[in-house]
Image 1: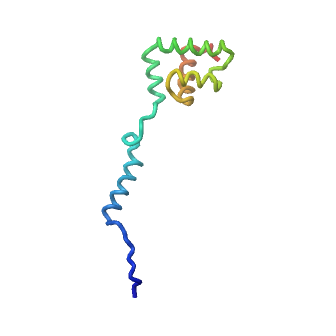
Image 2: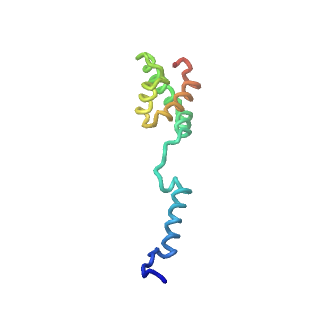
Image 3: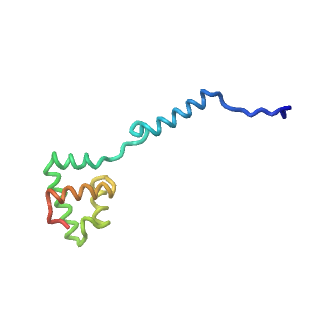
Length: 106
């Protein structure tokens, strides 16, 4: 004999819609989530604009002149804030620019 209480469940199609939303969030991050900066786009910008590389080398040399390594947390933060990127992206950018355009930077 039943106790008279019924468990209420949403209709199956409501559960299916919820499952579909989870699938969209998991498989389409560029549609739902904000775009993240792409380190390769930074490198492409430097490749297509040698003047930008020269300006970055000047900035790196100025950081060195202040007694900081460009790869120190201070150097990385300065480059990141000037370029509007994260310190991880700044490290990638610095490595590329120093390697090709200003190998004297430390």
